[in-house]
Image 1 (cartoon, one colour):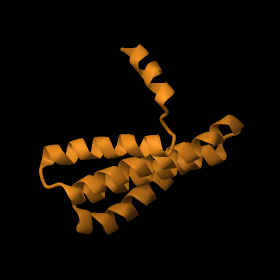
Image 2: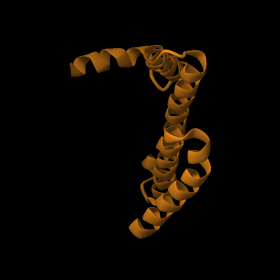
Image 3: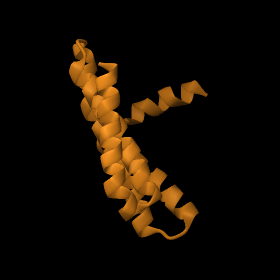
Image 4: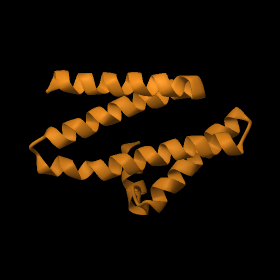
Length: 114
């Protein structure tokens, strides 16, 4: 199973890199890397016998989509690097709140870590 997961990760990463690096340069390589490990995660979730782990597929996809959309949205809207970083963080937080991946009650729990 580990070798199969490695093969899937490698294949997805190489194919994505071949397609995306000429278009997006460094960001294309990062997207290919992310796609490879997302494919590996989905493979492990499908192959597991623990049914509770199957519940993480949707939050995984939603959180990853929010992060990617935040980055691309900030790059489209802002030219300053610091504005892009700040905008991406803000967009990601708003996206996670809108999709209810993070709730207001979670902030109290997050503050207790510090």
